[in-house]
Length: 363
Image (cartoon, rainbow, N blue to C red; front, side):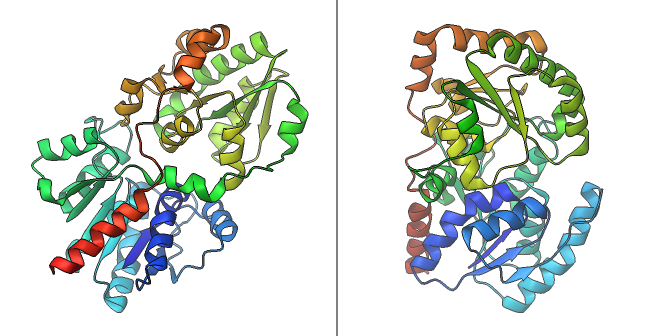
């Protein structure tokens, strides 16, 4: 089995599957395209994972087309050399798309983990929406997190016998990272104040940063006596410049990006989450944390429908209003925090390997 990833979110969600495959003594090959360098290297070290092939495709300020072009050739050489009997990709990145194309060219069966997510708006999120739609066309087996994502694929004409609802591996990953004895200077400094965890980084939100950050600053000014807002800031210089300009309230703590273990534990200690991240929309509800999604659309409608997520958009007034609603109304907060997570129970990786065992038996 070959696992191909190139970003930190991909590795976070493939790691439990890789561990389960190795536990069952499968022959595993790990390929890192290097699409995101620094943040992924930090995580690989943190989890003690050594990759078999590092393609090192990342260069400064390369375009989406350049990322794909630089990935296809080296990945093709690796697949030709190893000749795996199965290839796994995750999600919706340029690496996902490249792996899917190479599986087609080399006629290697392809499994897509976290399949079926859709907004049906090809520019939101961009380029992720079309990356996953194309991968869905090329995949032989689709491991979906929910019945909603299964239904998306069935409407698109995918073979129902090759779609498996298994939950989301993000929940599995929490078993590896949450620590009972976690300590961090941010928590020590916050003291009795409640923690509001912020993440903002998506490409389609860059033009909305002034509105988003102004709203966060408004919340920090209003609730600063009782809350601390913590923002592990993204490395994108545009994001950092906007944060310096707008996030000026005393209650805001801007810190460098956290490792996955630290971030998951910070999430566990938070009171409220404000984010445009996809993965956090899945992780936070497992820890009983209400999420305000700072986007106009989400490919995770199950969380919105269940009530674990609230889609608030990117407008300043909308964000402030919804944050105040949860921070002022304890009954509403507790109701939202108590809702069961629709993304599974942390057994996704074993379920995927059970499916693979069944495929081997049939063949």
